Image (tube, rainbow, N blue to C red; front, side, top):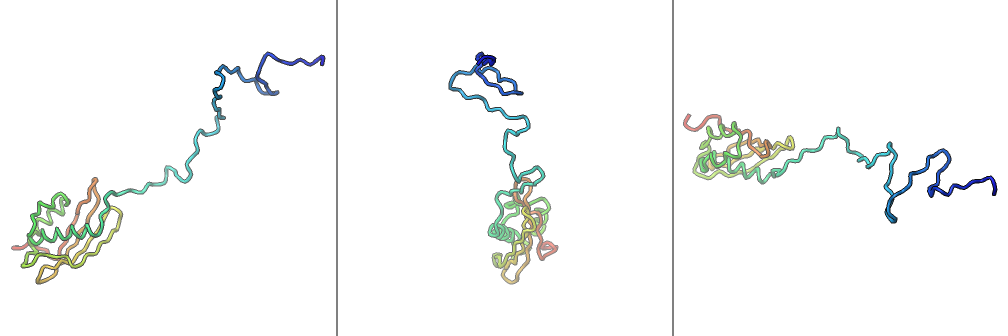
Length: 169
């Protein structure tokens, strides 16, 4: 085998056209670091999630029809004069509170008001509208409420009754 020379000085083999790897100075038994090409991403992209897709808004403590009916019953008691208006103040917006103050006591009668029928409609996830028929003994009255999610709480934003004037006016 004269004429062929074997390189025994390097323990690393190199292929033609590729430079030889630098000598490895790691302790025996440790693994070589994984090297990635610069064009290969280091993580897998999420499929189906892009920045343009809006996330659904979660409204905590979604109001059930039973809760809204109970709230309408309480407001009917305020309208009959059996509860003070200040008791429901934290649950009302400013305009709804003013409307309730003007109409408090207008459903007054010999019998306690009782809800006969309620209809709940949700035009948006953060809004609920309730219409109710209130039995006041001698006659029935109409009550409509709008409840909205605002500033981390559910508030009654509007109240309508079948009476336009306050009692005594």
